[in-house]
Length: 485
Image (cartoon, rainbow, N blue to C red; front, side, top):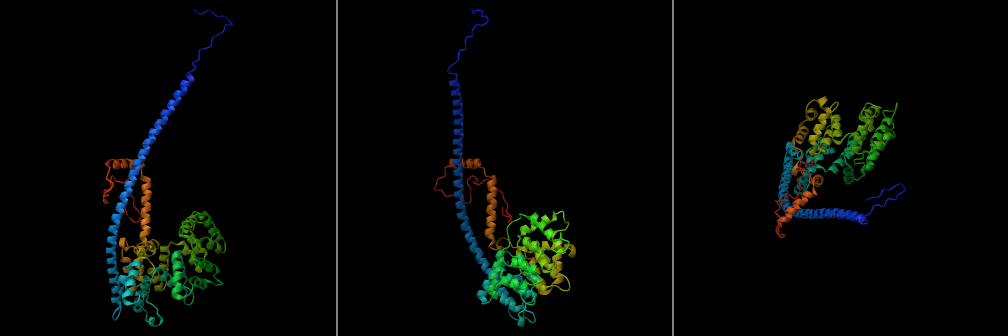
């Protein structure tokens, strides 16, 4: 029985368990061990899954190798058959051109039916057969059959004949020929010269310079500078000199478009009198199409003007420099459409310009060109503006040849230039890679690898190239701009 304790009595301390702290430490360690064991278990499971994923990937690579080998054999067979057919068709066309030229008179319809309905690369193949068989180029044959009344003395071609010659030339030869015509004679044909230097790529112009030197034994760039220089056209001369360096920007460099737009306004429409052409030369002469488009859009957003950049250029500039600036601001097909429209304005039409524009138009661009022309001029010319223009401003063989050109479908499949195949293949591969990266799930791959592993296929059994075990790739639907699924 406890005794009564008064003030000042002492209290005995509670008994302390000396092992409590140790037991708590052991409990904490066991929890950590269990947690680590769970992590290890998950890691082992993940490693095993990754091993199954590796099985899946190895099997997929094996399938791809087998499919690639199988497809390669099939493609080689098809390629041989296709080449034999192409050889036959090109030989037939070469004989057709000769037959259209033989005897008294020329069968212009038969000649145009071949030359106006073939792509550039097809015509080069036909020309090779023609050269081999008849020991002369098709251009020489066509030229001898389509000269003007005085052409037997001067060598002048009819517009129809010149159209066919442009179609038969390589891209580089055609550009060189156009530039040569534009700088020959009394004064330069600045519209044709600006057009050639504005719509062609750097590589095309460099190739044209080589062709020009070979064909005319002079330097193309120096001749351009010589023909466009003058005390009253120094800004135009500087612009053309810049273009004659053949190093215009071709990338997607859209940076600084807003500042460029403001600078152009301040140097042109923002001035009470005159312009500072140097600013336009600095910003636009070598600008890429993407940069020009960005500047045009930025100009429309300026608060200082309600006009477009094109409208302000037309208002503030005159002469050849205006032509050059507007050419730079126009996409390729739009520039050609505007030049075609200008060639048919006024009294009569410029048949040489018509032959030049359509002679250099790629067959694959005919539909887009028609759409561009309709967009720009349907309001003035009405429905089917291009057809109406050609019917009104051309006639005879020239009109019939152009009708054949626009009646031909845009080249697809085997009719495409073989040089496009590499670009198309890369685009398709990039599209597939991007789609696969978005949809690939390694866990799903592991499940498929596990299924493959459980089947335990004998290593020496060939993989059927027409069957993909367990659908090696996740479904990746994709469509490229070329329409391949």
